[in-house]
Length: 331
Picture 1 (spheres, rainbow, N blue to C red):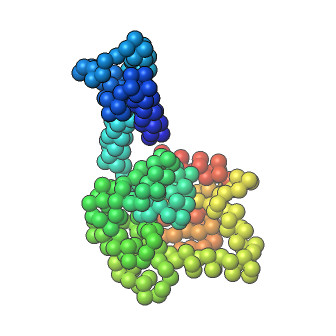
Picture 2: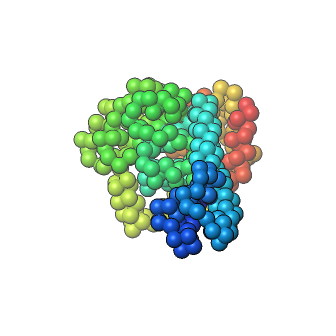
Picture 3: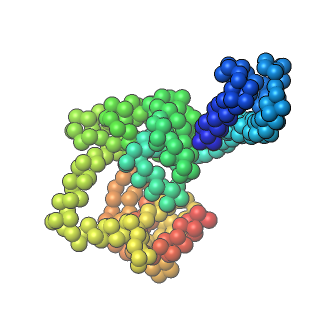
């Protein structure tokens, strides 16, 4: 765009230069001088409107050398900007559409505001597949810059959710600015995918939370409640908060807390915790076990039997956790 604007400015300067040149050398009017300049620099050459003297002919030759080369340069820039730019955009949209058609088991993030941006960055950091739905122009430009998969539009629109692959998605996170928008998104997503795990943002009002639950949200999160609770706990239980951050967010010591899902082919299936090898082989601490029916067993005893569909919350070194995850994927 800057090149096109600069080309336009220089074009005007060139036309004025030629017009005033003919006015000064040949005593032509401004209209005649502008006409002569235009047909000269564009090589149209319909015919001279004024009789040229020797000085006028030399001036015309200089104008041709300056103008023809510059006009060719302008056409080149316009072609690259308009044609190549449009082609690049079309190819980019086609590539994006192909990726969206193939993605499965992913997360859909509705809204790329302050909260949505952080969520996407964390998903990308943890190498999770996700698609962003956003309609703001500035936000879309930032999403494109980050290289995230994106669907422009209103997340409460069924067609937009379908393009984002809601029927094949693992979960949806609704973090647009208003409760009403998040409620519509929840209703639409739940109707399109009854098995979808939906987490949505709420202002914190109790009545609003109940509406989200009835609409189909699995979890309703209030950033205000979370922020207030965290600030209070930093005063009341700072060591506990530090430990949770230490375990969940990762740290310089390489420790992390992760969840491991037990499948039908897991090597630890139907074994007591003490015989699973989690402690001996991977040096991991099992903090909690969540059963398929939702029951949670905190600080499980060594004789607890690991069952199919259990979710193990383990704490240990990042390398060991990654090694366990790879073993679970292979099984």
